[in-house]
Image 1 (cartoon, rainbow, N blue to C red):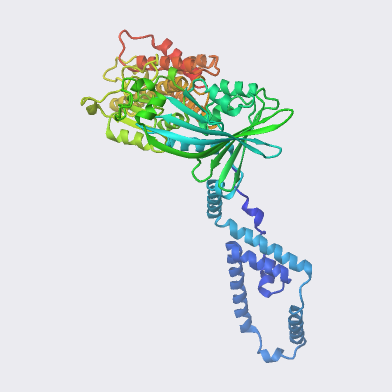
Image 2 (image 1 turned 120 degrees about the vertical axis):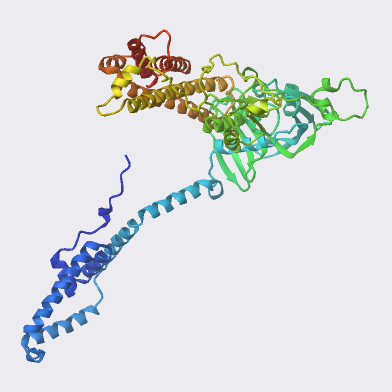
Length: 639
């Protein structure tokens, strides 16, 4: 519970009447005089009492002046002489420096007064404090050299997504490979790599130029086998290190400076710690392996440019009983080039096998990217970001909106909505997603002009109810007559003396429509939860970062929380008309955490029961048993 600050802890107590009079007469010690003055400057209560006291004194002096004799009569009196001596003594005392204790008391009172002044505009002070904290958080990378390794890695992944080869182009990286003795820091060049990634087909072409002048070429399919001969020839030309080569091959690692490759490299390191530090214009990300790792790798390191988060080098550090080595891959150039016939021949010879040798011809027509099913693709960081954006716009709740992983590595958001306003909302939510993303959201009239909608990437067995609209429209109960099974019971519940039948009927309609809408909303959230589990299954998310997995889990928790909240709201509403017997029976139902499959089944059942009870039904169901079952289902959903 949030506790407001205690203002009275900084405020001295109110001045009593004697101290007010002494303050007016200047009879308080200097420290107390300063304290009283500070208090009066900030306390309206004591200032008003001081004004009242001053008014009384003024009235007294006025009355006294009328009855006293002339001042000359008292000029020589002993009392007047004493007063004059006392005044002269006070003037002399004022010139003497205050002792240390009194000065400390004055400073303490001034600090207390300052605390009170700061508490007066406390909202502005707190707002300024929050703003400063936000600014520090926003510019952490600039103000502090200690950053999160996973955060930098995620931003580097966004850079790669943004520089994914566009249609009809390839990316070309030139990489220098060195082996460095960690003890003597002596570097041995191992050669250079040319890594080409294609936009048309999911392959990577690797050409290794060895110091001896020989060349090793390999073509590796994405998520396929690593180019083991190329790795062996380049890294272990003077004698293979079998455990390291076996590990790199098992991880399907392609010798490249990329975030995707780095994630694959450290996926089985047996350690969860990571660190990052800023060194000038670069971030160094250190991912240590478990001690005694079978591969012999002690640590993997990725260096990222701090300006645009582009990866610049990758290092594999190995240790054994005799030496410690660093295999460093440094990217010396990175460019995007047109996908010419020559480059196409490197990656996919079958595409140009029919061309005569030596014939100059334009590049072949590239295959159109096609959607991939969930079974044939792996989830990417960009897919998680796009799913999160659609989740924020509620585009996952019954609307015909699908997120497709494409064969060229890009993403496609495609679907059908009711109107242009809704389409613009979805487009705006997706603007924050980086990387290759295409949005094709149609309205009904556009489908008549020949626009094509792909089948969903996963044939989800659980379909939405045939009736009713998505969440953008409310589902209404059928109240055309008293044929609704619960109509009489609801009418008796809402009927009040002096209230017309028409007004009672309106209350029944409002209540019924709210229950039907809540039931459908609960089903849609359960349906979206199950669909989310299939989209981001364990098999598809094996290569995602911890941050991406946290986003997926947050979306799941949002749907579960909504299902629980909507079920509890229905239960509260129906308990008012069900009576104590049915409500007590539902309370005895065993509850527990439900998986997405069970939750979806319960949500469908409650939706069907609500539609049965609140719409025209032929034949009329047994109202009491159906209502009791509905309350039991809602109790299980609401836990």
